[in-house]
Image (cartoon, rainbow, N blue to C red; front, side, top):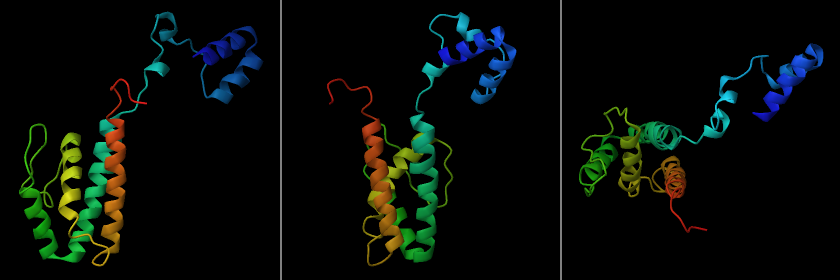
Length: 161
């Protein structure tokens, strides 16, 4: 914000010099209304959107698509095992329970997050190194995602070094 304000001040003093600086920053010679409101810098308000960046993309939509592709190659027996494992997954409060995941569409990022946890365990006995190397590697990717997701979830806990 300070850089933009300084550049606008330069522009107001000398249009030639200020215009070049504004162009280099990709800005227009317009005063931002938020500069007049105390503690309202939009740049400091930006944050990581955990739900959409993780659950709705990497851990949800894309991973599930890849799992479906691999299972379709492995055949109906593998698909049936995954569906069976998912439907028998233990239930607890705050975790979505699924009966049919391979032919369902999900629009809720939180459901995709829950599904990523459950489908990891459902695919452990199917995506072995000997049976499908791609599936085995995808489980490693899913493991990394779940570990990262757990660490991101520790955001508000005090006393963690």
